[in-house]
Image (cartoon, rainbow, N blue to C red; front, side):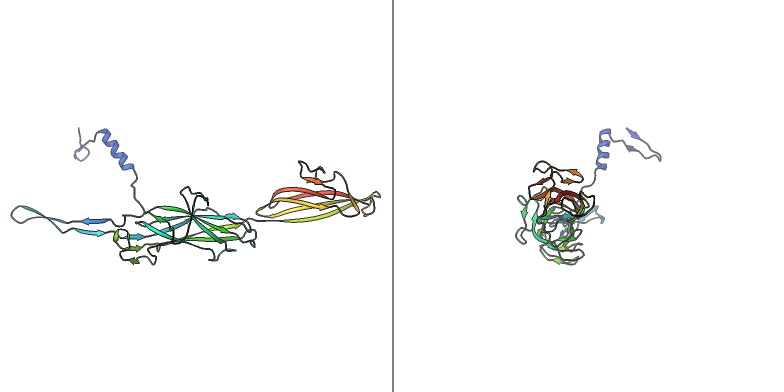
Amino acid sequence: MMIAPVGGAKHRLLPSCSLIALLAALALPVQATAAGTRAGSTISNTATASFDSGGGPTTIDSNRVDLLVDELLDVTVDSSNPADVPTTPGATGQVLTFSVTNNGNGVEAFALSTVANAGGDDYDPAVTQIYLDNGDGLFDAGTDTLYTAGANDPTLDPDESIAVFVVTTTPGTVVDGNRGIVSLVAAARTGTGTPGTSFAGQGEGGGDAVVGATGADGEDAGAFVVSAATVALVKSASITNPLGTADPIPGATITYTIVATVTGSGSVSGLAVTDNIPADTSYVPGSITLGGSPLTDAADADAGDYNGARINVALGTVAGGQSRTISFQTMIH
């Protein structure tokens, strides 16, 4: 079937199935890698000339020109932690996660190193190990590979990435809110330098290796933030006696009030308050309270107990910005 559009030109209509296939093909994204043409590939080209020298049409070919594609050395490092990673004073096994990507066009091995003392933070985390991910993106010292520089440098295909875990220890001297920065550096084993630096014959496939825009070494930083908490304990006493005054005389009752306040962005666990019964006084049975609610003297399901010599109240985990109030009574002999 023929159709004549405006202007008189005629075009053959494609069968409906062919038209659908063509439209689908045009809609598909073009698959292209960031690395470009693979190192070691040969680009060949031959020119052709056509002419008529009087004896009829003649065609001749030029010599073929072959170009060997050199290897481009490029790498990027990206932190995989969207925010600072919480840590606590003295904590071990603290992990930052990075991604190392070969942006070059040839297989390349990369040496890994860290920088933890570049400044711009409050403390220097102590880097203890680097691990190479086993492919699941989750750190597990039992299944991931411990990195040893020069022995198992990750070798990546063009556009291939690998997750790298940097394991650190937080000094015990840090305080709440301190930040510690660690950078991961990946450098091409073939060589690094200013863009355009060439290493003759060292590229994949026998060509040269040429340093790309990244200088063939990439770097990115991750950070820890200390989430710590401290406890302040304030104790006070009030007195009542049979005379209706506040004098500490024999027969007077002393009400002790203890306020435990947690400050900082972290929390404390296993918090417990213990107070010995003072000499020359006797504990008033059933007088322990927590937040105004009575506790039993027995070591049972509630938080308080009295063992004949002291009171104890287990407060458990308390977050920064919270406080707990305990009271109990004794009588002066």
